[in-house]
Image 1: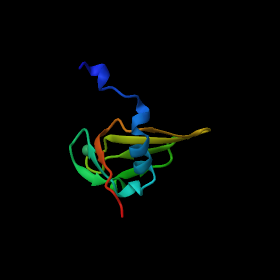
Image 2: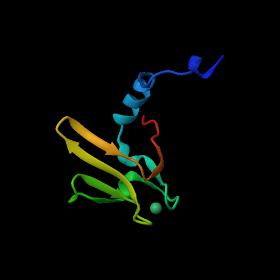
Image 3: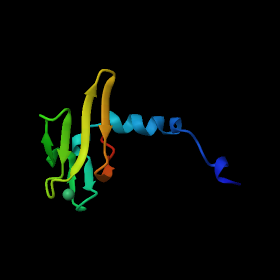
Image 4: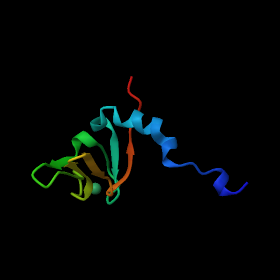
Length: 90
Ligand SMILES: [Zn+2]
């Protein structure tokens, strides 16, 4: 079996991504890729006066994420996040 037998397209993630993005995401924990600190997204520093919202690490001020409202919805960049832990909510 080669790797093409194991490969799916991004549509295979539809259910998981739908589960993630309908939850209260501000309680999700994020690890800063720069300093390694972990905090809930709701505890990080947010600057709303930029073109869009800029989220910075409360410990080292590194860029965590950018959210921009565009005509078709939102554009999100998470380049400063090592990971985001979204837990199931009951
Ligand atoms: Zn940091």
